[in-house]
Length: 352
Image 1: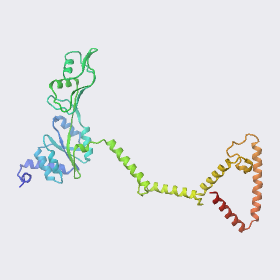
Image 2: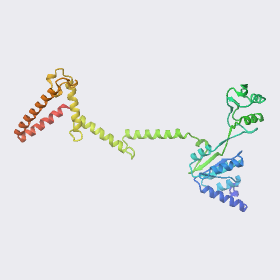
Image 3: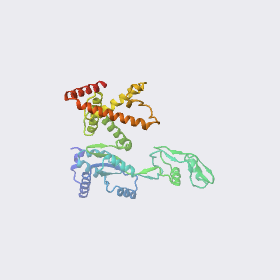
Image 4: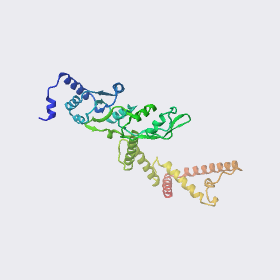
């Protein structure tokens, strides 16, 4: 029998059995389960963090052996989290996705002082500026830890940003005292997510650390590119159907105008096109007397003098012409009407 099987079947005290059952119940009640490190977090601050998570996540701290046993009993892949159960850890459960959980835990971290003997999690920098400390031995202490400091204007000032310890270095007693005097808290205290299991997938922190805004921008760009591709490829979907129909209608109308197809919806465009072409031709003729009056001076401004007389004469001629046309039309028979219609259609087609 394997060691794991023996651990599952061995007899354990009732209180441990109840504790494991309680942890199993907690695990099964959430969509995402993770292992978080709680090393170095004071008890009071840990309780504050637990309260801060209320409503979104639940933190469960117990003996590591009981946590591992509970994970093994639930199975369904959760036993993989047992590899992260070492040192001071706890289980955290949430119905949020792993990315949301990671973001929430990172946002809940708070600055904290660092003690002698601890390893610097990142570069420790004493910033440029006035320390607010009166001249005295403290300037020597600053210089001893590597800060560029001097007395200036009745106080101790740091001349430039000074890196006094690189990430991975061990904090000395002198540096602890200097940082404490300046109120610099170079580390963050919070729940460090070691691994989280959700929807059958195990995630590690490196996979969950992402720029949400950049990720959203990438998704929008991909969606836009996909939409453009589907429209250009004329691949119909629910999202682009209206655009494809509008494009098709526009293409059909352009073809009808180009081919001079006398469809009721196209006739206004055909008339406008013909009018524009006639006016363009008229504008190229230098001898205005060769043009009908309505096309004379199409590009010129109306004359300022005798405007009313010209307008009256034009109106009179127009009325005479209309009367003559009506008299001639009354004398035409049906056959002549048909011939006129055919001649008009031929002329309109020839124009295009």
